[in-house]
Length: 77
Image (tube, rainbow, N blue to C red; front, top):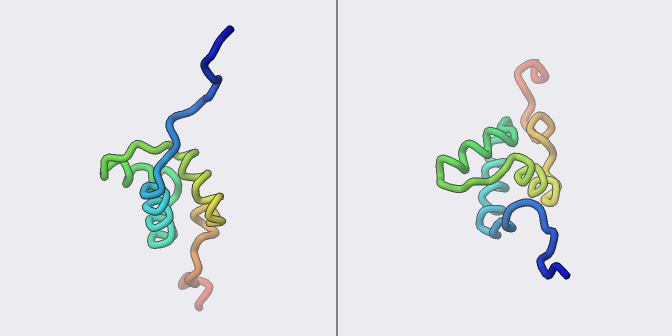
């Protein structure tokens, strides 16, 4: 019999990375998953866009266009 589990995907992300994803998403409301992924890569963290999406969904943060809370100039005028 096989003793290994059939787990797919990479290792689970740390709490620090999840907090960093949350901070990048809340401070940069126009950034999408790929932009956050690129910024994390610059910092030396390899995280997939789908993992970022899953983390933000867990934190109940919507995708980039809906994350903006400030009104745009068009809405203001």
